[in-house]
Each structure stands twice: as structure tokens, then as C-alpha cells.
Image 1 (cartoon, rainbow, N blue to C red):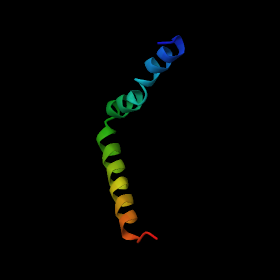
Image 2 (cartoon, rainbow, N blue to C red):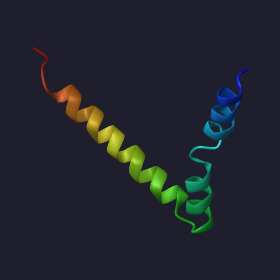
Image 3 (tube, rainbow, N blue to C red):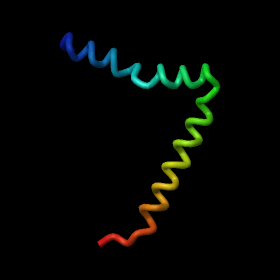
Length: 53
């Protein structure tokens, strides 16, 4: 593995964990996940409501 590839893999494995940790510390993680799930479901319903051409 090249040095740059190793550096990228070390960085990318931690992407996202800081925000999750922050939200959990602030007791907002469950609320944020719930809101995100609702938005995805609403988007999926919207997409299925329109006929494709």
C-alpha cells in the first residue's frame, strides 16, 4: 500500500463518527436518526407516486 493510500484509509474510516458522537453526547442522536428516516420514507413515497415516462 502506498503512503498516500494508507493515509486516506486511516482518515476515511473515521468519517462520520464525530458527528454521531456529538449528537449522542447532546442526546440528539435518536431524534436526528428519526427525522432522517422520516424524510427518506417521505421521499420514497413521493417518488413512487409519480408515473415514470
